[in-house]
Length: 204
Length: 204
Image (cartoon, rainbow over all chains, first blue to last red; front, side, top):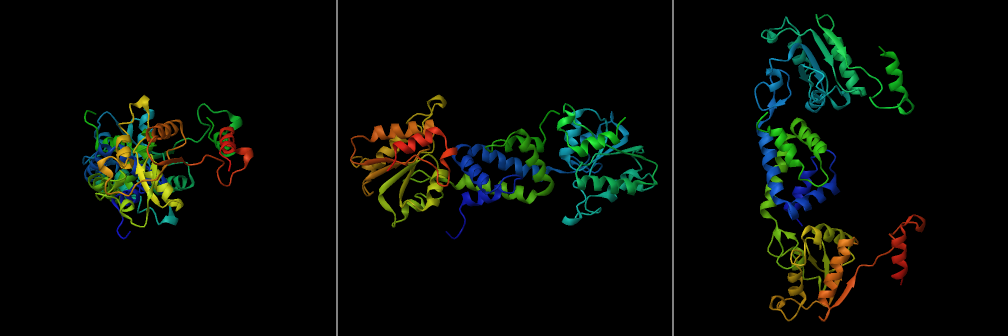
């Protein structure tokens, strides 16, 4: 058993998927090769294609196939509002709400000092250039009037929001944060203490 | 939004994996494109490679890269015992026990009349030729003396085992079935009634 077989290599490769361990990967590999080789080939093509074609939008840094993504190019959107999110998935979640019609800035990560992810790695400089009207980069853009921080409500997401808010102090922009509170449809009895406390503080 | 984007195509393609629905697929697609494009490329290569190289063993019908698989070629194995399993994954599970040193026959499925899977689709004819000493196909093989039915203990697996046992009646082979019973390490209090009943019937 010197060289790994094609099946072993495939099982290994499938483990790069999030949430897929050794056992699921083996199950997937057997399934694909037994029952769905055409699906396997289609997946291979989609992976290659996506890896080759996707790049970062020059304006908001989200994943796109174009130089500037469709959202940034959409002239019906309010260019004075900029919503900062961690990932394209978060952006997609916000888009589904249809509650926001401004532009986005995608950090592609969050501050995580223990993993060596600092302000530079998540593109804070790029965000700053995008907002700061004095820097050359944003000449053609309409000025941003409000930055909405929509990083996750985890320790790292909160830290990221805090750091960005600090960095933007002194600039002529309003900085807001998504509200914390009781989820829609839930009963107070079953909501955790921290959330209720926050929804008291942020009450309107 | 006429043509699907590369990301949408990838999300769609990932849903061919067993146990992966729309949401997991979207998460996987975002993850791969954001953080692990080299993993995505390696997976694409492994998929293509496996789909191109894997075929069925001429002797036992399992997945292999050769004409006859390593297990069937292994001369230290007992050629008089033939263990019938549903899938290569089941075969791998049995191999891990190191309790069996005979050969295998992999059905690549189970009887499932509702899905249009009958005796022909799961290769019962092939199995019959493999065992029946009068048919020409098994000339070079040592005669099979015992057929161990190791299909799953589901309704369909049991039906498959029953049909095979019926088909082999009259042939000079002993047909056995894996024993049903209480799983090792479990307490009777928590074992389901059917299993306990079977372990009574099959007591030794």
